[in-house]
Length: 199
Image (cartoon, rainbow, N blue to C red):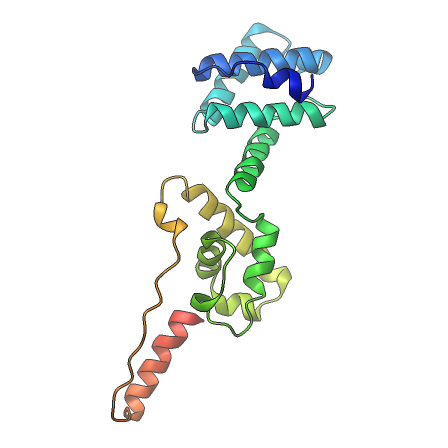
């Protein structure tokens, strides 16, 4: 089945109907694999219920496009996990959100630049970097820190569905210096605050 044919199929408004349509497309496209994976009505019903539970938080159109893309590019019956990954990829592309690896490269290339002054490709990259810690990104080896960053980035992507503040960068607050020099104790306190904030 190619993209032209599936693009003419009307996407159902009901999610139950969408799941039924998806399973019908999968059965037609991957006939033998489909019947091996779902040998009886009970297995098929359980699979549909699971897919519905996992896919109901997404808009029908993006779920349908993910299935369409998989049908066009795969020789094998997709797992639910493959469909979820394809939905995530489509969402990233649509919203110009960098892939997890691209986000890691961007966050780890910050160098000595203040994170608040950096021109981020997307606020999610900033928030993931802040969650992991800028000091860790600067000082730890890629082997040690990349996994932590990718996990934080995935959490940010998931949280972004219901936390709009993740779409914003924090505002830069200007610090005003006092007229007279600070005492050494106050200088140490201020330095500690700066270290905690930026490192």
